[in-house]
Image (cartoon, rainbow, N blue to C red; front, side):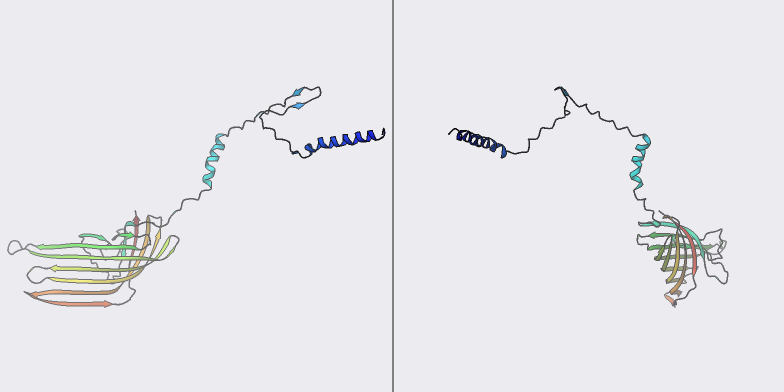
Length: 288
């Protein structure tokens, strides 16, 4: 009896210890997170005294120098693409130019015309060309596609009067000329500053000669169609130098001559041929 009592006490003590340890075994082993604070973590030393960690001193960022600030401001621009420089006009533009006309005049004769109201491609003389005296002016309209119109408008009225000194009536002759037409320039090849162009031209001319006297007026109408080639060099998008060679293709003329009261005779002439007998012009134009 005496020997069994200690064993019973030991068993009871073991059961009591297991009962107390069971709740702690099933508890969450992860400790609760401490709230974050801005205070430094204290350091414990021997003797129980608590010494706080030294506060961290913020390091001031040095201010950028003026040269560095300028570099930062300019640096992004260095990565930007340079502006595009166009060699030719990109919009509808108008040009005016001056130059020389070199006509095929084997007889070396002079056929000078007087000026009236004119605009477009007008040549004032077919005499041998002098480089000191430009003889051709023109205006052009260029479209974004490169197609260029070179219109021609000539309105001219010439008159001459001969006074016989009062013995008879003065003799007056009047000549009227009207021309409408245009040259069309179509670029075929564009390479660098240079264009190779195909040219086409058409015009209609009305001519009337009323000499002294009655019932002797001469009227005529002429239709021409031509072709040619040209080369143009763009100095800039506003300045252009060009050389053109034009040839006749079709020429039709109908003339009517009065021979009396209510009487007249008519003559028609036509010419068709693809020949290369060019009229050469060299010009410089300024585009807006």
